[in-house]
Length: 161
Length: 137
Image 1 (cartoon, rainbow over the protein chains, first blue to last red):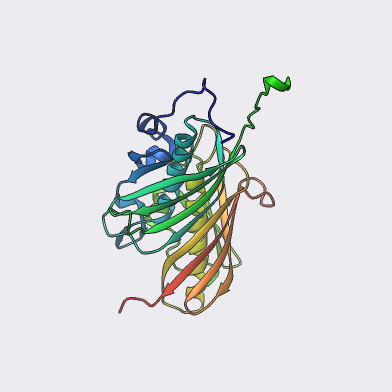
Image 2: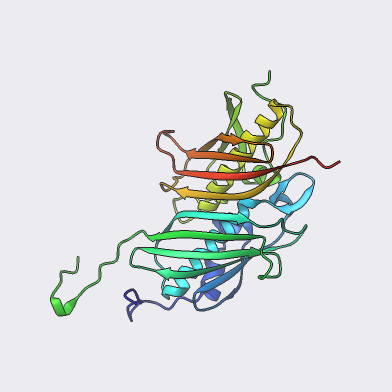
């Protein structure tokens, strides 16, 4: 892989970073929580809440918060795979709703960064309400590096801008 | 009269996030969200998820208004949404409005744009497919 983190890059631990990154702003308002992670994936929880419903009278979480959940899980999966925290931007995010979530249930968002290049990160994932094998939604997203990284090539004497 | 149909444009989630109907344009609601901590993403920028929520609200609002106008009592279920993030949203009010590209008996295809100061420079766009369901008997 051409884009392994440099040895000096900090180690990114989603279990430690996620609570900090989700303590405030939109993620904090939603009440997102860290749940689990692997080498290239992270799972977050969006707890059920009465003021986040998609319809009056039906106690099912709206789809907007699910997009937020998957966006954040995607970012964390990228940093986990890269083992470093860097500025990224969502280019596009597609969400296919395969079935309604159950009433009064948390929604869990599991995202996996399955491919990375110098400039782009490709993510897929599922949102589920307890069983990852029975998702409520599938997602696909592309993210990009905001700050282009300069790769120094000392052997060739390349300029390090 | 039917320019502003008596329909529920805002979901509990939308109201909670601070989304309101700013105005109606040609029987289509323009929705607005003020900048607040609740929609903040990384420092100084709107959260992509909050923008998506605004886009979805505009999409469902436009569809519900059209269905009401056509005298159709129907429910709506999301099939999918694809959001393109075009520019970083700034710390200012954001707006969104939708166009029903195709309205069938069972599905609707909707195109939505969100902007801030300049409508010709959208910060995000989305395409949504929505299932139109029969009202519960």
